[in-house]
Length: 287
Image (cartoon, rainbow, N blue to C red; front, side, top):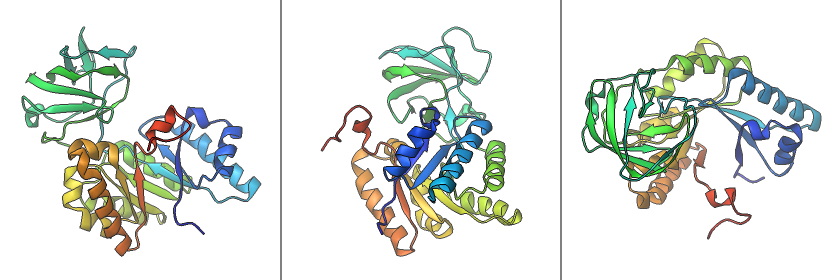
């Protein structure tokens, strides 16, 4: 029996039973529900669909809930925005935006963001430089342009940001996992062991048992990797965000080191983000 498994994210394009059945019979082992997007109702329908297929075809496809965590995101845009190199834009914490302003949902103080800090959007596809800041607004210069879409993730690796210990949304989503008897919970942007133990405490209190995976996607998580592996049931190496925080040439080395450490403790490891990315456009992967 192969130890390597295939995980696929479900979304609007896979809500069709025929498509999902084809994925399963092509070798799918685990479905991922991305709770950064979609509604509870949409995810519930997907869970019901998987359970129906499992029962009908005597399959045992597992379901993983991927929590949003502390991710900063662009707000809802009226339409996509093309950002061009050297263009000046403003990100604001005020939801009532003016012309040339774009809302982002970071709730903390901007004091930890300094002039010259780089801001990455959508796993680094768009890169901005902080030129100035006001109380609730950042002035930024576009270094690498692209099409800006609603709800895309933002990384500011060198900034000292403030986040609450555990988001209200994550708590509510964990309750959904308990009610629907999901198999795995993946916590995003795990920085230290307590980010995992807090979830396990909630599950214990609710007398529910499922596997909790830690997503490794920050510098701080790398510093605390040994403690994180010990308390987690599995590790997800999120290469997209990690590749923004550390030099890209170090990613294969870090990836191998984490897999080795996890293997010693018999913890499964998932390598994710930009895996075979070329196959979104081509039938065969690049070499």
